[in-house]
Length: 146
Image 1 (spheres, rainbow, N blue to C red):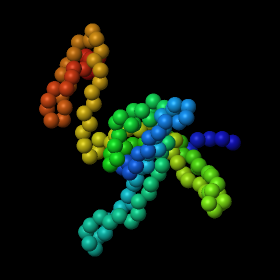
Image 2 (cartoon, rainbow, N blue to C red):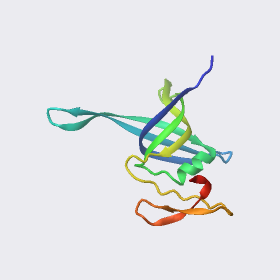
Image 3 (tube, rainbow, N blue to C red):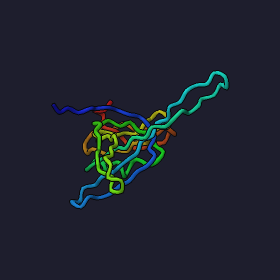
Image 4 (tube, helix red, strand yellow):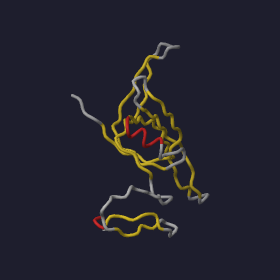
């Protein structure tokens, strides 16, 4: 029986490795980190117990978009399918494995900062102004989006 273990995660981008396969397909291996924190009532401070790292594999057009948008340190929301990558260690000849997430969708979190999104204009539509978080006009949006 085959099924996908779909999940969503939130964390900070710790590492980005971009490459092109021999067939010309763009691939990004992106590592997302998440701290396990707890509040210590005696010290009245937050403490980090441990950090979990998950490697996320991104392919095709999504990989191109990630390369042009996301940087190390960004907080991201990632959705995809978990799978186990298995291989034979060349030095020890022992079987190794790693849990990875094959990404279907990824986006920046707006929890800690606003995002300045710029979209191309559609010709022939009436428009209304769109203002950035600092109050400056960015573009006009189609009246159909109101």
